[in-house]
Amino acid sequence: MLQAATSLSEQNTKRVSPTGGRSYQNQNRSDAGARSSQKKNASSTGARSYQKGVTSEQRAASYLKRHGHVVVAQRYRNECGEIDIVSKKDSVLHIVEVKSRKSVFDARYSISPKQQTRISNAADAFVQSNDIEYDGIQMDAILLGGNDLVFIENAWYN
Picture 1: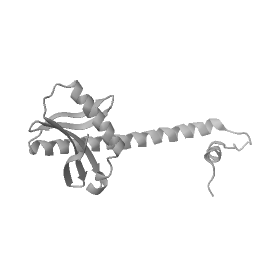
Picture 2 (picture 1 turned 90 degrees about the vertical axis):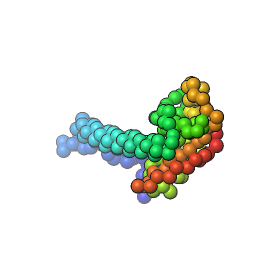
Picture 3 (picture 1 turned 60 degrees about the vertical axis):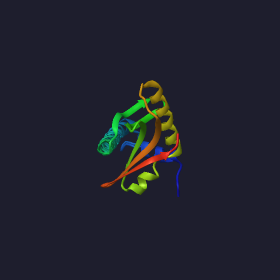
Picture 4 (picture 1 turned 45 degrees about the horizontal axis):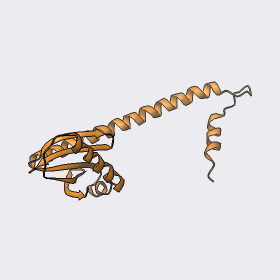
C-alpha cells in the first residue's frame, strides 16, 4: 500500500536511541551527509548533461559550417530564452535548436510547442538587439542520436 509522503518522512527522521530517548542530532548528521551526496550526484549529472549539450552544439555548428553556414552566435541567452545556434547562409538567418538523445527519433519529439515559442521569442529579441542584415529567418533543428545527425530546415514556423 502507498503511504502519504509525510508518514514516510516521519519514518525516516524519527530514530529512537538505545536509551529510549529520541536522537535527532545523529539523524541530522546522516541526513546532511545524504543530502551532500545527493547534491554531488545531482551536480555531476548536471555537469555531464551540460557537457553533452556543449559537445552536441559544437558538433552541430561544425556540420553547419561544412554546409556553408556562418555561425553568428552560440548558446545565446536573453530574457526570453536561449538559442543554441544562430547562423546565416545565403542571407537567411537560421535559428537552430540542437537536441541530442539516444536516437534521432527520440530527439525529434523533444522540442515541445512551448519550447518552440520560447525559442521564437528569443529569436525576435536577438534580431532586435543585433544589427544583422538578412532577407529571411527560419527555425531549424539539428537532431543527434548516437552517430546520426539530421538537419531539419523550417522545423517550425515563427
